[in-house]
Length: 67
Image (cartoon, rainbow, N blue to C red; front, side, top):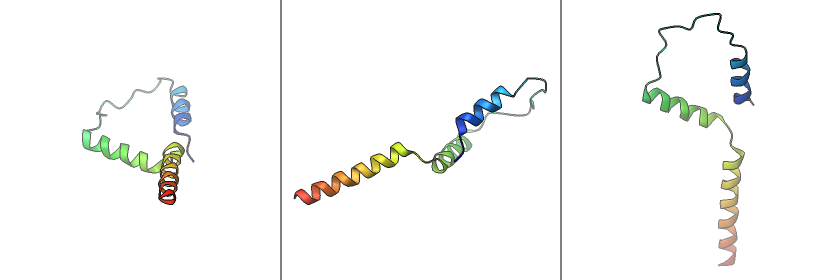
């Protein structure tokens, strides 16, 4: 699993400013930004989200058993 925050921290720490950035770089348009955000969210595994899904299912099954 990739440690994205750690990679960002390392990258920023090793950027010494000796090389100019590309002046042709522009901000992402909204569609591309949305696509990238969704792609990264699909790639990452959220333990919290998964635990909520499991708890919802357990709660549902428990309610079904009590009826």
